[in-house]
Length: 242
Picture 1: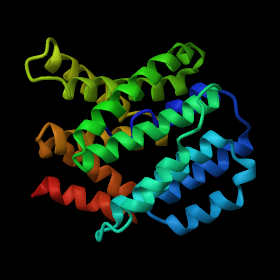
Picture 2: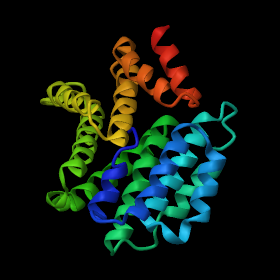
Picture 3: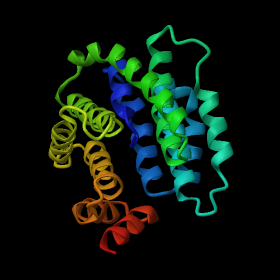
């Protein structure tokens, strides 16, 4: 599941943040997606006390996930697993704790699917869906920009939920196609974060799950031009071409 529930989880819990808070996470996001991990890590650690804990958890996990993905030797599995364990809260009573737990579960699910740990993935998927539905009623608080993020992750949840169901499940293909159509609309967003994440998710869906790499090529072409230092986007574009 491609980064499912990422920034919507932040926004549901924290619809109002100061401009000062926004600047560091946005800068870190750009550094991460240009694979400048050392700079992103330094920026985050220097500003940890000034960043909302949920923002910090998202960016820290996302940064380390990308470091893992970008490591051709795949030596970072154990360290990433340890990081996920660190972010599983001892209790999930407060809104902050629930959001951080949901973020962690979304990355854990993606990681388990990648490592073909299917039984663990099924359990993690159920926990993530249950927690997402518990938090969803807060969506009405979102403004138009935040609602785009909600629609993105709602579509991703729908796609992967139906993808994991048996082949002849009722409305499986129709629901997946509707989710793809919505994500495609969001690739035209004026918000860079929404446009970036939608393009990445949709490109990966076409390449890995729909098995139609020719449809994913356009999205990776935009990503590699927007984030020229991200070698992974170039590799995915070339994979679509081949």
